[in-house]
Length: 52
Image (cartoon, rainbow, N blue to C red; front, side):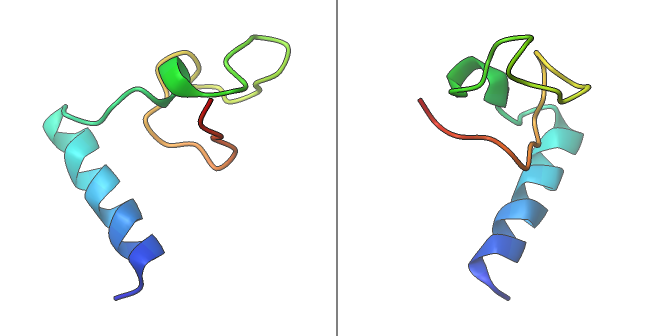
């Protein structure tokens, strides 16, 4: 299993258990005009996430 696939799988497991971290809190794009993710500000998965 590739590392990226394992990471996505693990994040899905953590989300279902209610233990996944909120990505928006540490994302460089955490601003309404910079982020178009419909789950913002409580996204646990994001393809455009960039750590601050």
